[in-house]
Length: 415
Image (cartoon, rainbow, N blue to C red; front, top):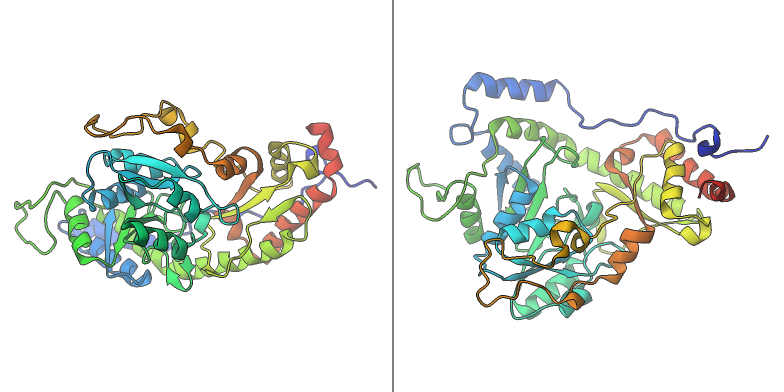
């Protein structure tokens, strides 16, 4: 009997039920009910948000944590805490979710795009250094998919040019670089708590820092300019907005925090299993494990597809994997500077103020060749939920990759 890929009617390799997200039980229900019954639904009256901030700071080995209403807000307030001049430049990757760059523009600054390493899909320190100007104030590495960026190399560049480092850790809750918690290494760390993230409360964000002066500014920025510890609700020491997390979100977050360490360890173990397997399967390449990568939180499992091996475009290979029962996608197939919001090149400042500032970036400082190859040709990923699978589920995912590779000639009919 001839074996057929599932796209041609053959049986799918992955047949067990996919893990669902989010994970919750009666603890979340009880926590929410406690908030309802307390009558203290906002953080100005309640104490749940404050407890969660303390717990997260301890978990990430930082002195301070500030809860806000989204991951993009976390990034924006982190920039504002540095008190940047209008038109200041912040270096970030083009291969990331658009919120990274949008937060820079919203803070009245300009995103300057540097390229990524093919080995990590995180910022390349050499590319970062090549786009630094006298207007650069910060580097914003994204720990993509949970992969920790090379913080040693980036911090060396930051120190050389006296720059701040804002870690976009939206995907990287409990990832570590050389045993140091992501979010504790740079000047400021920013985490997303959006519904799809490894740690979530529907919507929300957390900001971490070891700098007490920055903490005071962050806290005031998210609380209408109130300085932490000042009990006079109507004294506002600086400009700020209302970006506070509600007690309902914090109640859910507190329960989710209890599960995070074990879930992270489970995904890390499964990610290493997939790495070992995919290294032996032609046509697919996992990201290599690097010396400093002591924990990858695996919000995404990123890998590369060799279209020349399969003889068809990436999307056909992904369609074959999906037919076999594997959830997967092409990743960020559109780079930030290719989106309509950025193609005009008028990246900032958001206010329109242009004193001492050129509205269009030099195109040569915005092209990222490695990022373009990953986005348009080779990049792919599995969502976090696939990494939550049990042993049998991971075996079936490996079998699906092996089957599509082995029967690649059948893809030519589709392509």
